[in-house]
Image (cartoon, rainbow, N blue to C red):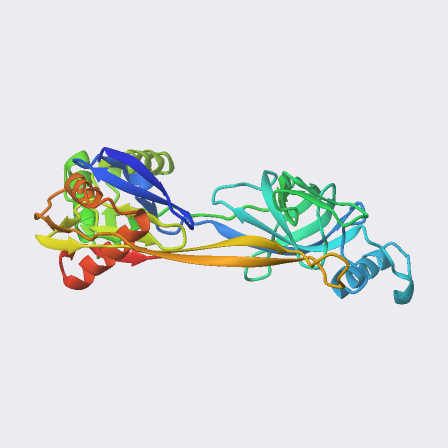
Length: 374
């Protein structure tokens, strides 16, 4: 599928809307590894609770009990005992630490970790995460994280109350800050592979099975449903090195995925994305706009000389209502996105008006596509 993306930016009185339409031509083949994954090979999400130190007075305040209590507990391990009432540190912050451990990563490797503030810290800039174990959902430790934090920005406040901020300063990353204690073992099947599609579709899974059978010259792929198919591993590939070669040959197959006719609308930003296979039956459309413009002109009223009156500013408002002339257009039955865009652009409407038109077309039954409103 060769796609051309065009953007129509229209300025109105209130906002700037963006229309993005995807013009679809004959579909282009996609690698199977970009459409599906092998069952059992998945990423493990890890989480941990830690402390960040070395902040320049931007850490959690005294009212944040998490950081203060965690700091006291940590100091006890080093033989330091401090009374709770005398804890007045502002260079410590309590954070949650997260990471994704991909399969086949072995012990001793290093991965990136992310930290997120939990208390009332104002910035994590310049901080260092203390040693933090990261666990999975069952409480088993897989990674130990520690290191200096990079937030890619700053958050500066002056004594006068002014604030200069770049990017978000309460979430940061530690590149290669997680040391893998042990990897996640994945056992490849000996005789049958199960392939799961990211977006289940009966036509796509049938095409994948046909390609695999053609590649290996036999009936080895069996679709189970719209989202999964089982592939029998030929005897000559049923050894450790052979299974790797077999999987490599399968995941590099070029598949032409089938697509559902879909129109995605984001009303917050005024964005419209029209996918392939979207058609509109013959229909007539009339669309007009009502524009209300309210303007205020300040008028200065001064008292007479030697009077006790005060000079005041009195706003004088005026309201103007304009109704644009509405025209009735007929859209012939369209067979591609180019025809739809040309017909709708002929109306001279803004992207936000197009959103209303698409919704009305769907209700009228003239648009043959799934309408998704974000």
